[in-house]
Image 1: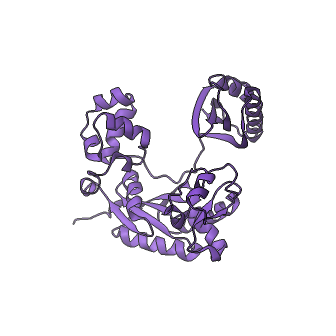
Image 2: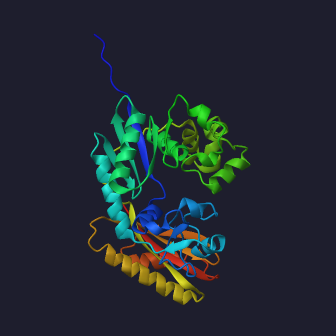
Image 3: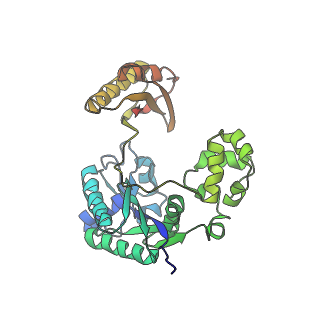
Amino acid sequence: MTTSRSPRWVLHVDLDEFIAAVEVLRHPELAGKPVVVGGDGDPTKRGVVSTASYEARRFGVHSAMPLRTALKRCPECVFLPVDAAEYERASAVVMGTLRSFDVVVEVAGWDEAYLAVEVDDAEGLAREIQAAVLERTGLWSSIGIGDNKLRAKLATGFAKPRGVFVLTRNDWSGVMAGQPVEALWGIGRKTAAKLDALGVRTVEQLARTDDERLAQAFGPNAGPWLRRLATGEDATPVTDEPYVARGHGKERTFQHDLTDPDEVRRETLRLAQELAGDLSAVDRPIERVIVKVRFAPFFTQTHGVRFGGSLEASAASALERFDLDRPVRLLGVRAEFG
């Protein structure tokens, strides 16, 4: 007698324009209009875009863009302040809906989750999940289906918006081979530029590049990892264990540049003290303290040191590694746990 097991699938559920979509549900009169959420909602102040609706994205507005730049690109955009509590509430309903299915749910953020499931019709299940989330929350999602987490994540990009897409080992080459290396999750502009200098521009070229050559350019761990990305292989499990943050930080954007190094030091100390207060109830050892400085107009550097027993002293030590010879528009202090 022959027995068979349903194939094991990974589904990546990604809510479309999540924050903007939540705001449109709260303000139905904004449906179809370009909406930008970021900062306190005043685009004349310093701050960055948290999310932009698809209508706003057509004007070239995107996440992490300065609000002032977004205003220049889309003067008719509607700008709204960030309301984290509302997004957390909406996210909790979505995740509860996902858990109502017979799947393992790994929450990856407010607006995304990985699901592990053994089922014959993965696409049918994806459409069922999509419909359930829409019915309970009014929010649309895109779902990528893969035979591992990496392929499922990449499949979601092809599914957007409001679609379902399957990407497995069988069709990896046909879908991904000719794609630029930036299409791979984890490769940004800087890494793509370094690969371009090696003559590596497509996913297929990266997959065929020798590990030793990549190790020389990117390091013994990162180099081979990049090649594995290009093959689509990934053994990372989907787990429903609660997410444990690797660190915690505080940032502040200043409406006027800090030009006095002593003022930069005072503000860094203030952030470190606030962070220490946030962490007073956290029973986890701190391993490193990292200071982030964004210089005007928009150049960012980070430096870190091993934790020296005091967040304030460690932050001050990390700050000494910067040349404070330019105006500062943002400061951040982050503690990384051991």
